[in-house]
Image 1: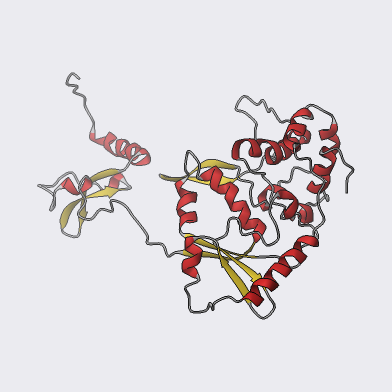
Image 2: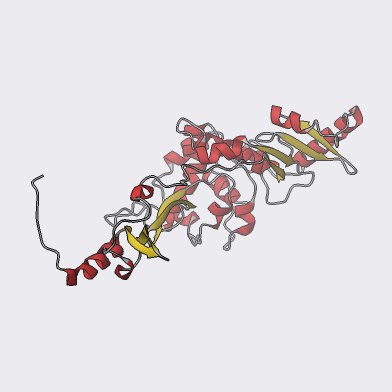
Amino acid sequence: MPFISKILKKERLSGFLERLVRDRQVFAPVKKGEVILIREIDSPSQVILEYRNAKESPKSVFFPQRETLFRYRAEKGRVLFGIRTCDARGLLLLDKVFGGGCSDPYYTDKRRDTVVVSLGCVEPNTACFCLSMGGGPCSAEGSDVLLLDLGDRYIAEAVSEKGAALLEDQAFEEGDEKSLSLAEKNRKKAEASMQPVAKKENLGEELERLFSEPVWKDLAESCLSCGICTYLCPTCHCFDLCDEAAGQAGERIRVWDSCQFPLFTQQASGFNPRPTVKERFRQRIMHKFSYLPETQAMLGCVGCGRCVTECPVNLDIREVVTSLSGGNAR
């Protein structure tokens, strides 16, 4: 560009520097003790322009004497211990979502370094229905080690290489036929205690057929859109990305979101394709029992029962599934 020459009167220098400091990092000669150094300033009054030369060169502005190029932290291996089998099975769906074709390193790194030790349910909660969702109170799916309570001891089943390595610990003894037999007895007893949920084999197809039917308004009539069902669910995974700034620093964060929230699908134009509770409630059910089985070959519900016990208006997903399957509510 062509050379430009202008005048800066000294009485205007302070205002010029103030504007620079307000919007940028400004480095200038400053007096430290008896020497002149090049340092970042926060006020024009710090600047010294009548000097012969600075004690040190300004190269440190671009080439610091000590500069952090990147940070790392050595992570210890982790163990997720004593979770219920439905929650362990729920991890399989999250693995598909976050570890599929477009892998999420934040999830997959933590998952890879974690050994999952689940605890079978000898006496399942009355709100649980994992058996009807393809799992079971003593299912080992999603676990590395499955523990089954035998009274005075646990039987531990390793179902992965990570699990087998964990069982090398001196705390474990060799299994015996008596323990295996008792474990199988407890497993069958637990399964027999669970009440089945009437669910069509082709529920996904049935939901597609019912998509525009008024049944959704009736089912969602009492829903508050509070989102507690999605926040407590072991398989719900909706999130939002937010940029947060304070002064000259900022960060991008990922936070849980919910398809039940009114603003979840609102577009910048103000248009919302799911404007009422009916559409949002339908989305949750369709996602779990139609969309995910189609895209991930797995139901989006593992039957943990949290949404049954914690819903503030007693909406029961088992009754919803039964109703949509053509049966009567429980």
